[in-house]
Image 1 (cartoon, rainbow, N blue to C red):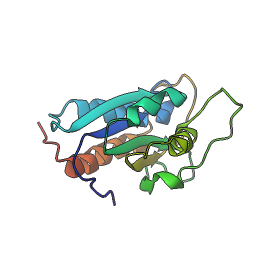
Image 2 (cartoon, one colour):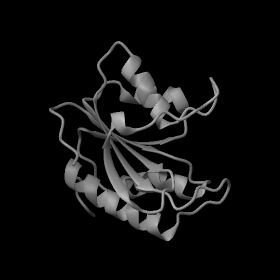
Image 3 (cartoon, rainbow, N blue to C red):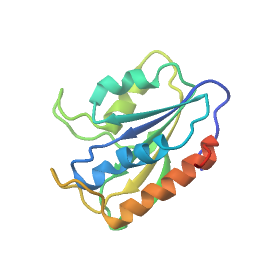
Image 4 (tube, rainbow, N blue to C red):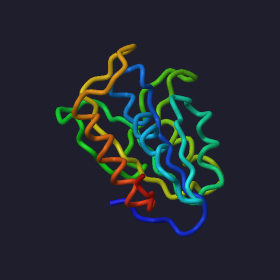
Length: 158
């Protein structure tokens, strides 16, 4: 279960690419949350797939929740709340395709202390390049994730 940080600005960082099937989970959560009134201490970001340039989004906040799809593993739509340390570093050629795992390792290597971090993932059914749209189980996980984050961040419904 996500635990609250103490005071300061909090960030929800939604990662993913809506052009690649269930990899669009994070952006779908962002779109739903953006429709709702946000508390003054909360910042919501549709991060996309920026690699190391996303490091700046972890500055000046006391807490960050990352929302992203996880690799298919037989239970599409399964939600998991994980500590940042549980996210594996993706194999990559230096300078190419850095994912959230690599980003989190880079964040931990910086001299400043990172904010309190949690990751919310939904297991993808499939990630297919240039096939927009979520599978039915992941679309349902979007709503469950929005409900989870609404309760945690005290976001009102409309």
